[in-house]
Length: 463
Image 1 (cartoon, rainbow, N blue to C red):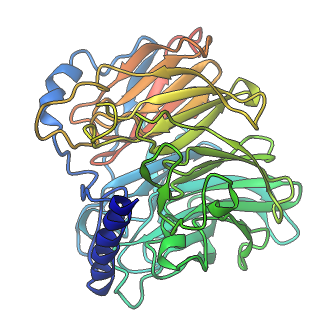
Image 2 (image 1 turned 180 degrees about the vertical axis):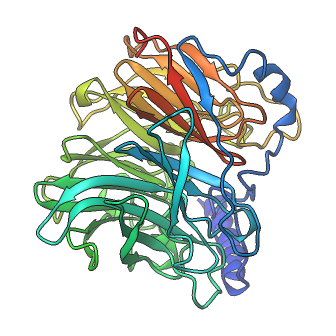
Image 3 (image 1 turned 60 degrees about the vertical axis):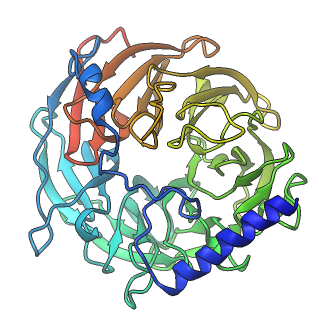
């Protein structure tokens, strides 16, 4: 324990220094010791030649469009791109941090998927020095609002900027060509903001689940990383509930909002990276990094019930990043973003996917682990990279789609969830794929450097 406390004290001292002198910290784990910027293609070159062979034509998909993204900044600087979503024939593409961010959300008309038309941008000029990576759009009907509602994550690039804020924005996109700002939910200024989020409906209520990493740590427990917000009135979002990991028996009071003395004897990182809700609006799946994927019954959003969580073997880095649900809510897909593959006390591996049986949500049971040729392709030096780790999952029927940075999009047959099998791969030139989304008869992807990609099915038997 002395060693653990020494490590904690050193890192805390460094963090205090970093708060006093604001800096743009881009490491995915802000409080970790690796500062690596997504989008700079660090250590991609050693795998690009292998991945580009026959890469654009999948067995049942083909790239039909890769439109040039508009420049929206008044200074003429280009943006990089984040996650994406589709709703009613429109694609919504978030933006990343390049050139100071403020790229907002780009809206594309997909009436002709082979010729997507960029028709609007929103959330780009609300707060300076911020980036808008995640967007979710849903049709909602509440006593206060009826139409299509977009929620957009807002993260600060410089917490020292007096006008910068973090949290999430709410926009009316009932007419996607003319988005209208409705409201803003703000998280503590001391944290970067809301990284990921999810919008769901429960009857005539609209609910957002916000993942704002390190809020617990930086506010010394006054606020939490995972919060549930009622946005039924989008002009006046109301926080309903927040989760304290210390309420779990395996997390004791020594937990400082980040450092966790895990039962396996290791000091692990715990923060809320991502949130997701199933189609019923009843169950939430919360990616809490080394604490695993936590499952909550949120039918009463003011008083959610914790049900259970996934766990890791002692030799596995945790890094529960994102989740998806399959098989009518009985199977959980968990992606783990591991970009530091060599760490004392752990297996040598980049991040890979785990699949769980969750018929009993209080007791997730591991069914399988899906790895690729990238997972253990670890050079002896210069091996820290996002290029080879899995990122986000989406499911349509019995097909799992994984975004994989340099690996592009990997399609996996999960008909037998105990035996997942790769069936196709799409890897565009200079691939740096962040997000994937399945919509109607096409698959959308977002490349950090180049933006929207549209892939269309050409074999209806493979869904």
